[in-house]
Structure formats: structure tokens, C-alpha cells
View 1 (tube, rainbow, N blue to C red):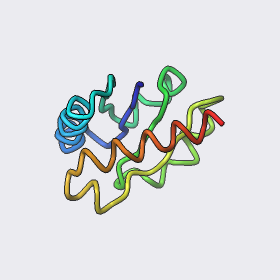
View 2 (view 1 turned 135 degrees about the vertical axis):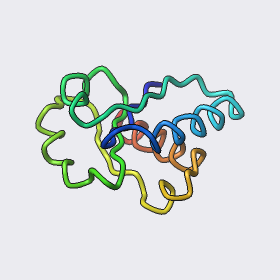
View 3 (view 1 turned 90 degrees about the vertical axis):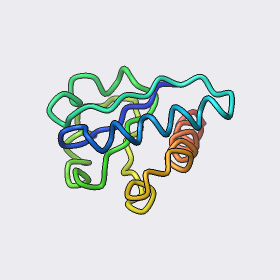
Length: 102
């Protein structure tokens, strides 16, 4: 499973990546998780299973969707982002991926 987190600069989202990786490891889930700035996300969206936007760039959702032919793109819950709840964000990414495979 490959999860791309999109943000402005990547600082706080990098911390969320670490917490998501820890949660994945504890659950025995093999996952590649990366945080990237919005400026770099457009060119690589379809290389990922799920793309999740930080709440601070949620206004770019439609812009990013124009660059994807297959990858689901969703916004990270503001509360989970603020609390850096890697487990919840990982669970949401898995749910999004599973729904997209149907």
C-alpha cells in the first residue's frame, strides 16, 4: 500500500507520516508513506494508491483531482491531523483504498 500525504511544506505532515508508519508496523501492514508539498504532488498522484490532503491545502482538492485518472484523493480529518493521530489517518487511507477497489 502506498499513501501520499500532501501539504504546504511538509514539516508537520512528516511527523504524521512517522506516526502512520508506526501504526502500520504495529498492525503488520506493509505501507510506503510519504509527505510531499503541493507543488510536487500533481506529477506523481497516479503512482500512489491513496492521496490524502492536509487540512491546510484542502482548497486544492479539485485541482489535484484533475491530475488523477485512478487514484482516490481525500482530505485528512482536521481533528486527526491536529492530534497527529497516525492510526486514525492510516485506517481512513485503508478504507478509501478498499472502497476504490470495488
